[in-house]
Length: 244
Image (cartoon, rainbow, N blue to C red; front, side, top):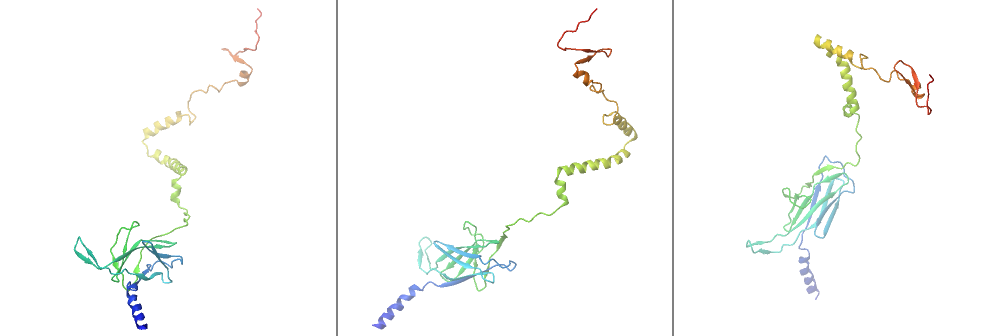
């Protein structure tokens, strides 16, 4: 009776352990410094997530990856028999300091593990690489910058200021004007000097200022000047009569 019970127990074990367990090791490029301890690689498939923390060697090790069983299936359209099943995972690496590329991982029932690049939508964008004894290197996209570096002083930034540009142009005009005058034709130079003497800025002949001889006190006293310079009163509120 005991022999029969042991035989029955061992006969039930093979279906339970028919699925093989595999190991996948991922490494970070050598030029990347030590990753933060919170960095984690995640394998995601339908209703299942497998996590692997970073090691001291900047690697991620997935142990006991379960391969699917080998159910024999017949493809009616092609007329061939398929005996290899595959479980596909999406590999993401969550890191504080770096952004990594997304990868896909196929675990086949024949014990073969393949890694390939995929887009965020799961579209295959790279060639499938079969995992061997050496770890598979994952690529870093970019580093994350949380602080913006303060810009240093640059003389070229001064030229972006419009006031500085106006001052530079004015200085160049003042310094270069004498050299321009010396290189002018004598007749043109003489004509330019005559026009400069007649200009208002040089104090030459100009129209008389109508406010130059204005009598402010007389205007405040309601007095007007006649043709001969005589003053008379106007509109004081009463009639002024002359006696003959």
